[in-house]
Image (tube, rainbow, N blue to C red; front, top):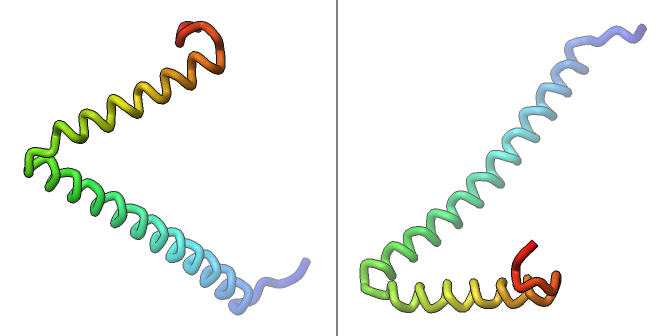
Amino acid sequence: MIPAGPSVVTFEVIRLIRRGLTETHELTQAITVLADRVDRLTAELALGELAELTKLAARALSHFETMDIGHNGHGGQP
């Protein structure tokens, strides 16, 4: 059995803390991007651009329905 002195334990704790800090930083960046997008969408909606958003959503839905028909040949039905 190899004795685990304070230096080995300290090294492992530091490694785990660094990994946690890195993951926290990445999550914070992703949340910041999402929050910016929500703010932008909210501003657009406040300016009355809901009609444009509705058109975009309808086009996206139509695109996905077309893809579904093409893949299973049943018009979206299972």
